[in-house]
Length: 328
Image (cartoon, rainbow, N blue to C red; front, side, top):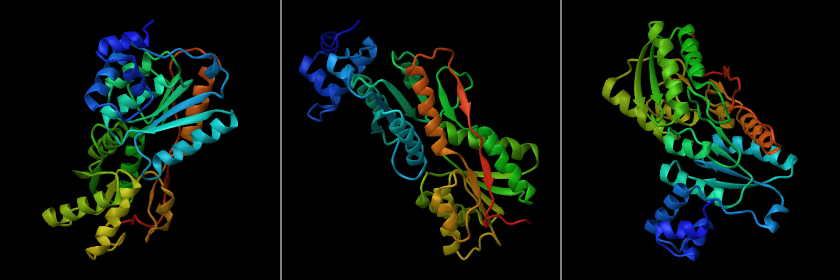
């Protein structure tokens, strides 16, 4: 088993420097920090539990991309409710959607002697996944769909949900749709887009897809830019999430285009604010708090000694029909 001395030797630094990196101190250069993290990863180093830490309240590390918006906050609420119920503490770290920082934060959580880790990350990162699979402690991932289940994970079927949205809009008479797609390196967005386009292609719907970010300003800018360049060659917009859909509605309002009388808008997530927009946003509800609860429950089972193959738990979604989509 590797020791902190081995890590220091491989990284070419002192044991004290390795300790500072492990404990998250800032007085270490980025270059040195990277060498230490790489050495920890190569040696699969984990600090040994001390007698003192073994008798303390158990701790679960949680890695999230951001605290902005509602998505991860609601998942965290579910995780925290289950943690409180079972007398666990949480150590939460955010990565700001940066892959390098995600790997670094993950190593810090491993080194902090947490009992288990919940990783909320839908990015396509094979290196991170391999690190999680080889971990000596239980790990559950959230928001990550893969063809082969290699690690416990909880989420929704985004591909099926995307198909469901296309079917809904087509049944409302919309045959020309503007799709605001999310980042290609995010599983949930790319699968949602693939499902939507698959159904649309098979059923004669014409889809124009444009890239878009997560937040209202991104939706606003995307639809404004498209309309200026191409004009109004669609009857509905499907936004990859509610926040960007809200930006779309604001842009259409500012351009004097009525929703849903002239253009319909559909979102995804059912954020709390979505029922308060004017008109109220038609969207898809995914059970985010329940996803968090389930992720912790599975982790707790593993911590309690339950063995078995990795499993994927898929929770259901539903369309929440409000006022932003018109029947043509």
